[in-house]
Image (cartoon, rainbow over all chains, first blue to last red):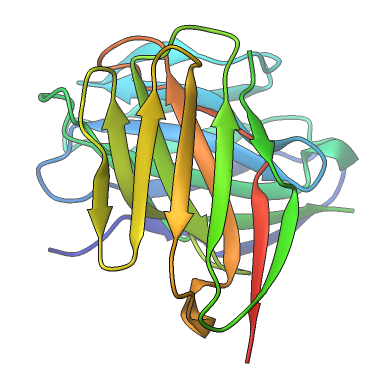
Length: 114
Length: 111
């Protein structure tokens, strides 16, 4: 099975711009979670989508949003970029059907805000 | 609510053993261990459920002490490939999608 894929792998944007990141989960996985990883804060949960519905949301401002499509692919959008948004954005997919549910991470999108 | 990992960093020689701990102030349902190498995605190692048994494969194993709400990751006879940052992710409930991760333990294995 192919793993979780994320595009693009690298992005450079300037303050005030917006950005859209994409995540394709492992085939058969219906849940997609997004995390932000920075050296200072570590891995922080952004949101989770399941069956095109947001299931959970972390403590991030409304500039961060996401959605999921019927094929389980997910996108996250960050509007009005700030310097502090520079981070590695990881998505993780899982089946969401068993108690030993494991999240599998994609390679991430490295976002740099100038 | 963020679990506390210890130590923050450890340097080993090939063949040495290491233990990484992950402690929570909350009652946990599960603990998930990942290893991340620089510039790569976190790779799943194993999951421990409350009431579950100690897990392990190859020379890496883990346990979960429910009384202490602490999980420990054991790396025995370390190899160069074990180098990386180890994270524990915790869930308070079954099917919880928002894992809460510790800050990580950087493990360096030297020849």
